[in-house]
Image (cartoon, rainbow, N blue to C red; front, side, top):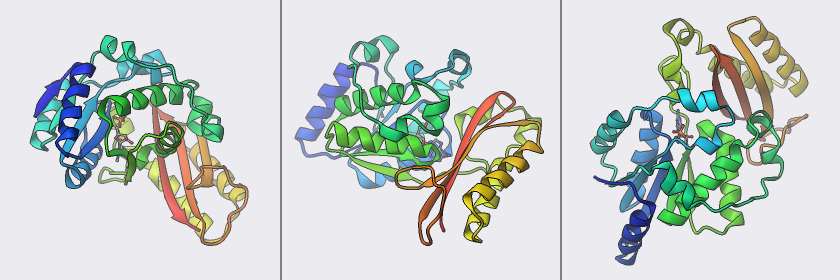
Length: 282
Ligand code: AMP
C-alpha cells in the first residue's frame, strides 16, 4: 500500500498507471473508518485494477466548526484497516496542499441545493462539491464509490459529474448497519453508551413510516405520525423527516403506485447529528 500526501505526486503517479492501461477506483472518505467505508473499498477492489482511498476531513463542508473540531480522527487505525483490506493507494493530503489546488467551482445543484441537508447545513454541499471536484481532477477515476447513507450527497455528486463532464461512473453502495439497525457512521463513536442504546429508534421510525406508505397511508398522515412518534422521545431532536422521489429527491405530496420513494431523516441525539434513509417501492 502506497501512502501519498501530495496532490501533485498523486496526479503524476495515477497518470502513469492510466497510461499503462490500469483502471482506477476512488473511495473518498473522511477517515474514522468503519465497515460502511470498507464495503465501498471491497466493491472498488472487485471492479478496478487500482483503488485509491482518500482520507481528508474537509473543513469547508462543516457548517458547524464545533462538529469539525469534534469529528473523530483515528489515522493510524485507518491505515491499518486499509492495509488489511488492500487499498493500493491511500491519499492523505494536508489542508494547504488540497485547498491551494482547489478551484472555486459553482455547480448548479437545483433543488438539491435547497432541501433537507442543504437547508439545514448551509454551504455543506458547496464544500463537498469542491473536494470531490478536486479529487476527481487529481485521480481521474474510472469509477467512484459513495454510500447511500448520504443519499443527497450521492445525487449532488451525480449532478456535479454531469455538469463538469467527468468521465467517471458513480457507484452507490447500500447502507451498512450495526446489529441493531443503526446506520454505521464515524459520528456514532461520539455517542455515550446510554444514548447509543437509544439510537436504533431512527431505523425503527423509518421502517414504520415505510410500512405506512406501503399500506396506502397518505404522505401527510405518515409525516405527522412519524413526527409525533419522535416527539415522544425527548432524547431526540428531529431536524427533518422527508418523503421524496428516490431518483430526484423532490419532496412528494402524493405517492403513485410502484414509485421508488426515499424516506430521509436527520436527528440530533446527545447533540450529535445523525442522518439515515431507506428506499421503498410504494
Ligand atoms: P464519510 O467518511 O462519512 O465522509 O463517508 C465516506 C463514504 O462512506 C461516503 O460515500 C459515505 O456515504 C460512505 N458511508 C458512510 N457510512 C456508510 C454506511 N453506513 N454504509 C455505507 N456507506 C457509508
